[in-house]
Length: 483
Image (cartoon, rainbow, N blue to C red; front, side, top):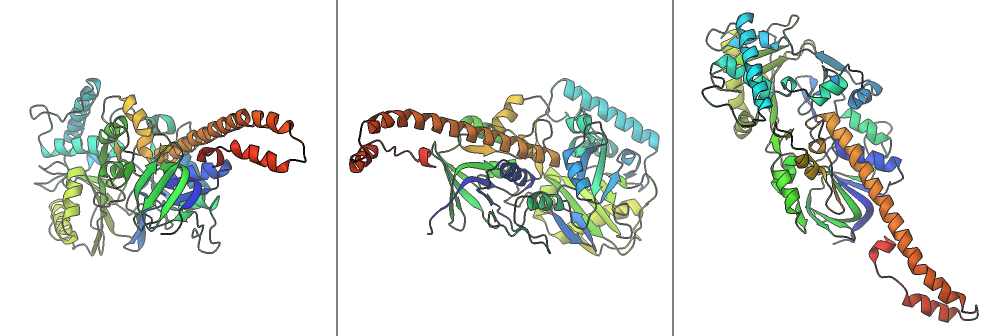
């Protein structure tokens, strides 16, 4: 095996939090950094793919929290990069609910009453700090109640408690609809501190290492050592872990010594949401595309069964693409079956809404976030009840091992800007630790050098060998003093 690669800081994961942390370190003089990314690309859960002649976002797709007095930092990055976005108005989705039996849209009065009832029930749960499922007597029963309950609790745009994202940054949301992809923001950030090709915009910097799956992390008071699946070893003074909470729970990375109990318990107590957008391409559009028709809902007797739909005509006119969102159990179920089976189910749902005459889909795209061992889910989901200690424990460093990512953001977990801001916070915390260590070394070196100076001052210049011998006696074998 080759000699270990040595650097000041290792960053594991090149998602938005990892890239942001590396950028902040570089801006503050810590450029001796190695970024280890398990996949063959940067971006993490920000990932684009070409489908049906357009660019679609498999993971994070919206910039949430726009239009308030305080500017969302990710929105600012998008503006600086001239990223194309499209305003999303969810407010009328509840009035576009299709009855699975009749195929007709529920009257607005019925939808409004069901929505009002669901919101009241959810607020009561919040006031009681109740994070358990609703019981059968009080819970949603009818297909429309189940559909609205799904929107309120599983679809991130419709949480009923005050969300910091919307309170701080504004209530508007914009869909990213740019052929360069949401991930373009990360490449633009990378350009500022990583060597990048002028023509292709490709990162060529040797400090970014792709296809490096970290499996072992040894840590001590003196430093850290990381071993990848291909047998490479990297050593550093510190490490920043920017992997998802799902990866931390999956034990892909082994720690030596093991993480303390308070840390592992906090990690295990955080839920990971699985959020799947299934894309379907058609030869022509057969769904309503007028004002307030971008989103529509399918009310089924099984909660979350192909419930939330969106057409892509506002973002990409003429694309003839529909997107249906599934979560958690339904996401895991369709990940385990073939795409052909998923297309068959989706087509049955669409035909119950729009009639049996509609055309078959020409193509389907099914992301698999749960079965991706480098992600193991889509985003973190903390219990409803306030538990500041849980988040504090998740983001707290363990010696020289620092943690970052959207799951470490108390106010903005689950959002891209949460990952971005956590990367900044973690890098700043690490910089403070580096300064403290340098000061400690300086103080201790002064403490050790003073008696040496007193000793050598009594020796004449004609005795260089004696001076050398005396200095040798006081050599300190601590790696921390020379690192």
